[in-house]
Length: 581
Image 1 (cartoon, one colour):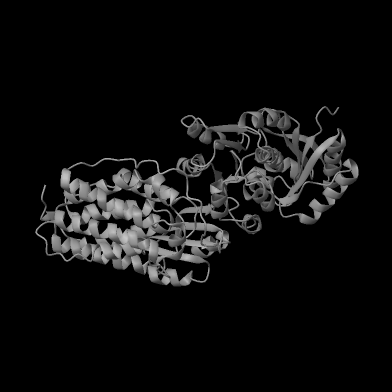
Image 2: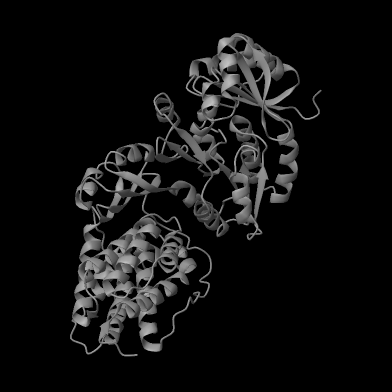
């Protein structure tokens, strides 16, 4: 199969062959991933991108149409540094081949050189010894060959040499004795193209198991915690302008695409502020935030055998989640048409301000892709994964994760039948057991009894937010307003919200809550609030007097919970002592 030119279908089949070969290299790439952060996900990110290209792109009657489809799919599936660089390389191919029906060897060679240039321009600070270097060196081949087959074969041979050289070009690679993971990924992509053009074969070939993840003897320090990405629609500037606008907001800033559809990547400690700023530059169509600290912990040899995961509705202080290595799956939040990730791209304080002016707010369970990305990653590093969800009667999150668990035997979903601080107490207990080396089966046995002893009592300042979210009828809300009703809300044994008491003052409501807390011996408790820290501290002091115990923590509730409970709500989550009367 000797080609002197590409039509749309031949180009499609050749690039798809490269994508398939790269997918098979996923685990091998993860295991050598040390730059820019040794978080073990380069293979997963590139594999996800390649699968998106396979699933979403289509061959066209022209090379222009084919390349546009592939570049667009690459944008949708791009994840991480190497993925976005790969996207910009493919965008360069499209821009050069745009409008062409077929591509001669000279056309294709010019397109790949354009792709390399765009890949370099995507980064604020290009680093040699990475995928960029292999891209550049591979295509130094002169287009004087008789066929495209020979051009790709020569490029692949150059890429293999350039790949080996990355070890000496980047200090972190030299110290750890590995090549760059992203660079190897692109080399494998070229290998797949070359193999197809030589044999006509296109398939996913899983690379032999290369053993465990390397023990990183030296790694780049994490300057910012969160790997933050978004797709921006109809941006108010070209990629270079957007990249410059965010240069001071973090590190590893990469911008790929065009004004109509742009992928932004940045490492930052404050993804919520980055997304606030992004919203000023265009419409945010997609967002992803990875906690690189938690990813690094998953690779540590002394990690627990059991990973503890919860959704963002569980209210626990960030320091406590860090100490216990709890992984979080954020719930989606929509406010006046703008999407956010609960506790990640929007903070409690920011949301309280937003609630005062937002006309429409709603929540959504994590997407199938979001669930799979997190749990696939954890599945590579932990023996068992326990996911503790908000009550299934309140959210579809539990059911969504169960769909994933049906095909993954090491994942178990535990419906806490609770939310907020009460869910947080359950998750905390499970994480303590995991850290102490307790097996997944034993954790589930112990935590079931613990959950049944855990309750939450919420004093709301107003019912208008519950009316707004459809939790109670407008008639009930109106009656409560007229009577100045300050109800105490809890969760029943089926995990459904219920009104326990109808007080007619906040003092009366919290007196009732205090009586409930002190009615039986208490193992521990926590106080959570929606923008009412002073009142929360006062309630905690009253609980301290009544129980003789300090609260485990006082913390803000998640934006999702605040959306329903309303600003000013304060709740006491309590676990009663085992065997208490």
